[in-house]
Image (cartoon, rainbow, N blue to C red):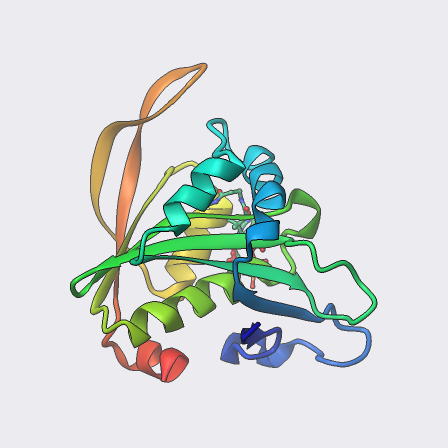
Length: 185
Ligand SMILES: CC(C)(COP(=O)(O)OP(=O)(O)OC[C@H]1O[C@@H](n2cnc3c(N)ncnc32)[C@H](O)[C@@H]1OP(=O)(O)O)[C@@H](O)C(=O)NCCC(=O)NCCS
């Protein structure tokens, strides 16, 4: 198992105390045993959940990668606490989904996952990354904006829920800007 990120890797974590009181977390590639937990996290996060089988089938594709965050302590469970799935084609990347377990949110896990996925896409020679986000999803919108994603368009009727259909915001991240190179290099 290759650990691709540790809590504290991100330069933006500089103002946080990394010590024995800090919540140690690691990010590594998804394992077959993880899919049931990913199904639970996805169901707790979205109206239209993705099953374990759907996620496994998606990850069978050679251009799709899922990164999983776990608690880093040797004594804690290795069950995923969050994940991100990305796809790349030619020089474009796409964030397909990401979610952090509701009880683990607002503790830096989402940012750790996104940075790990961006490092992977950068290594795959991706120049720009796209994603769709609900404009009312303030946590995700803030996370993407502070990572450098900017809105580039809208997709009408992209989401459907009990209140009907509503639009998604398309966001784009330019990988070759200096702060991204520092993050991914
Ligand atoms: C979006 C999501 C993945 C963020 O994960 P997280 O682990 O809570 O995020 P982090 O703790 O790393 O936060 C990173 C930044 O995101 C923003 N953010 C996260 N939660 C926020 C909230 N509740 N309100 C406002 N901004 C928030 C902040 O800018 C935050 O930085 P800060 O803590 O320095 O202010 C998580 O809220 C989630 O799983 N939501 C449900 C699924 C979802 O919406 N996925 C995205 C679909 S496009």
